[in-house]
Image 1: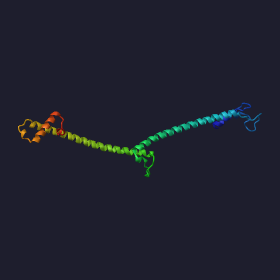
Image 2: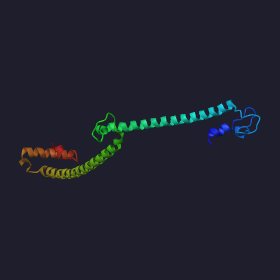
Image 3: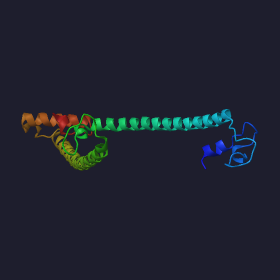
Image 4: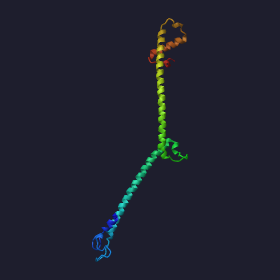
Length: 193
């Protein structure tokens, strides 16, 4: 028995007040002074209550569906924005046709591909950075060796009796090297020009 049937059976007879399901005149062929006389306002109230309950449920489902649509639209807009950042690949279907809007289903695949490419590029750049750092360390060692060489040359020719026999350009270089080395202890060849 449904809720509606249960509610309707609970309506009293207007003549005697006995509920519908217990009324002696309800069953065909029963001996009673009158047939069941339904109380129409009570019936209407029951039906109206049931209709209002269903309306409330319908409204709740509509509100839930509307919120789900808004949520879906919001998250779809985020995926579309990401697709726009990716560029033209997000607009091209698998068959090669170009669409006016981002193909949201392609965005995760494109992001995976982009991240894989970036990871590869980062690995390549890290290898290059390692090589450059090693080269820089070698250059630093070479600069230190040259600094020590210039230091020893400057000390050798400082007041040496053969200093006057040096070519003028060599004397000038030696003076600049000596001055640079005295001024900055970490000076290298670039400071001597």
